[in-house]
Length: 315
Image (tube, rainbow, N blue to C red; front, side, top):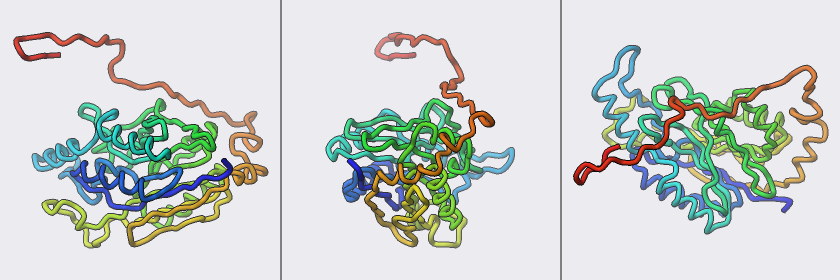
């Protein structure tokens, strides 16, 4: 296969209503009719734009804790029913999808990109560095979840929002041979477009950036949002070629789906005169060490069987 059809979805993600978000995600993947579909950051679980969770330095409130409880409840388990539902869809359609989500693991939430394909669920990438106030809500990923997925025709990977500004992360992904660089985001600034074109040109890869388009009135009516603008996230989804040429978008001021047919032979054409981790790398001068081990707080514990007490099972 010398070409693939790629699509990036620009849509709002229902906050605190995961069944509705899942239904919308599946409908949008179907509507895209593409070989590879990318959905925005935190589409399942929601991106709480303009909410402060009543946090100030050294102070939390009961109202803020309750809001986080709602957000925690809306996150998804991986694996879990939402993951299996999308996996069943990509198996049916025979396509690949990259879906932004909020993963729940115990008391910690992670911003993730979930990978799906004709074989079902393929894995995830956890955002390495939550940005600014996101650090109140999300934990940090580690080096064990930085996959590049071989789809057959091309290899795809993901960098979530401001991870795209991390030069060493980009270099790692280039070294893994990424061809389709998926960038789920909520960054709607004009500067984002320059970054997407730069990454395409630097990595000599196709860039598929999917952003949300979120209006204030899309949020649950009981939420107080200190924002005057009726649009909270203004979109800007875009598809870029390995030579930095915009193939579709950027899409502004509305929801929608952008699509483009990607000529995979353009990858070799673009790498003819620049390969950031190959003939242009100067490995005799520069080197990068990457720790891909999983970092867990407690290691070496064996699972304990449940202890039966009457009709209750305790662990």
